[in-house]
Image 1 (cartoon, rainbow, N blue to C red):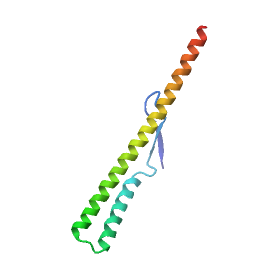
Image 2 (cartoon, rainbow, N blue to C red; image 1 turned 120 degrees about the vertical axis):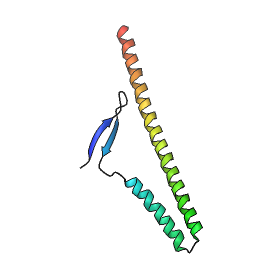
Image 3 (spheres, helix red, strand yellow; image 1 turned 60 degrees about the horizontal axis):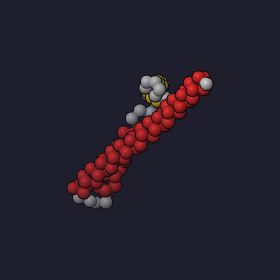
Image 4 (tube, helix red, strand yellow; image 1 turned 180 degrees about the vertical axis):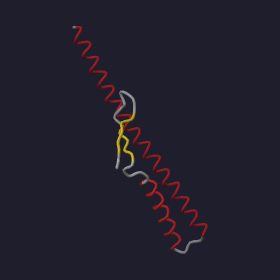
Length: 101
């Protein structure tokens, strides 16, 4: 059974972490894609050096892809939350100015 909990501190409390639902599927995908690459290269009759090189290249490509994807995801979330924060601050400032007039 999956459980969820909110993480973060105000004003950034919109992050929801899902625990126990589909944990580890990213690792499984990465293992299977590199294993498939190695099997494909070895099935072609390539030398052991070429098979190891292809496996290492697959690992580096997968790790780079995951890192860039995570960076884009975190940057996008940060930009969204920053925009909400700025919007809330500006509406609060407008309320303060309006009430003194």
